[in-house]
Image 1 (cartoon, rainbow, N blue to C red):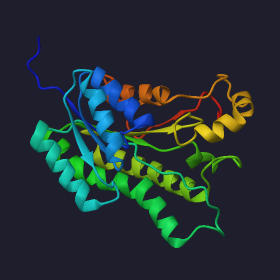
Image 2 (cartoon, rainbow, N blue to C red):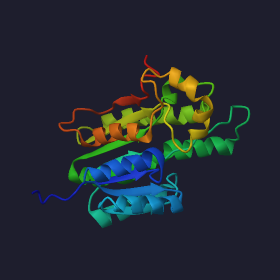
Image 3 (cartoon, rainbow, N blue to C red):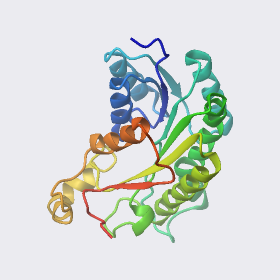
Image 4 (cartoon, rainbow, N blue to C red):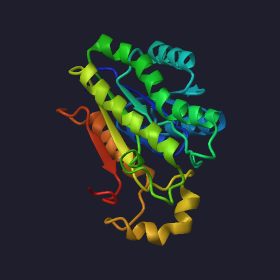
Length: 251
């Protein structure tokens, strides 16, 4: 039996949905997990549920768009666990407003939460990965980054712009941080979460007809791909963008 320390993952937006499903699957794979989220009450519940799996865990409550706060959180993870092996940038927000309705503050907030937070966490976690000479980053974008979003989508242009930025960040960092740190992204399609449940319920039949796999996706569908990118060996993947959409947006 190996005496090597268990790997450590940071998952943002981990209190529910894709983030929580990802943290759960990583815990089952033997990771020690640091869960970051703005919703403290939901984060506490998520941590308890991860603990029930027998995994080591810690909570990182706060706003992922706060640069200084994120740096302190990364330091706490290293102090507690001694290392950072994996960063999953999943935290995000929807933005349903159109161009002529959105305010400057709402635009800025969308970019801060969906894009700047990825920069904040990469900037905070990468130094610890470089110390070890290894690490992986998985960024969660959206198929809307490619398509601009369907007319019926809950989020409009500002969300699409922020998620397209995540893809640029992924490709740029993949080249910059290779060969020691692999950086990839996943783009969920129609995934049923708390944020999208109402919209999907109202249009389920039409949405399902548009998906070759004939069902709406689940957070677990996305988590499975993230965990694959986090654990596959040997790994010759970096700078890749994987759509998890049941074939809905096959090009």
